[in-house]
Image (cartoon, rainbow, N blue to C red; front, side, top):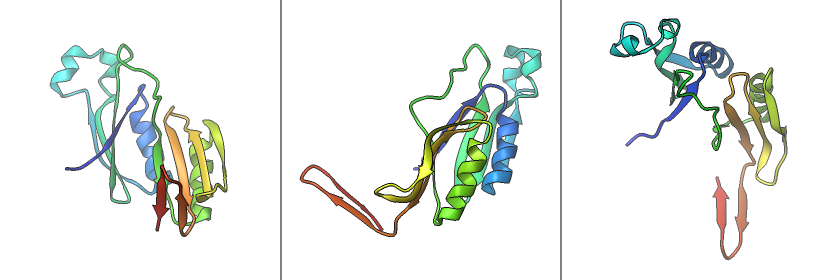
Length: 149
């Protein structure tokens, strides 16, 4: 079994993927347009050049997406795409790039579990969490045990 995140855009999937390609060092594996698919006959002509299925590889991990027609689109909520990096400089770079022209929900900062952690929504409306964990964290209580290596 594989687990992949699939996100919906409001017409900016290709632009977002090109941005993620540059910013995250990702590789676009697929950008299938509505045009030329059976869905084209049921899609407004101005939507034919939009992405019906996109797949991007981010350091061996898959993120999938599409442009969701306006009548079906809802703004992303209730989740974040989480990136864990090994050093704080990379965390700073990614956070700044993703937050540019977007919004910051939690500034990048030190937390009890991380050297750097922050939350931002990018210019395309996608929520991100950037995490650079401390070398080893152990938090224990009778109800909870959290350990990172």
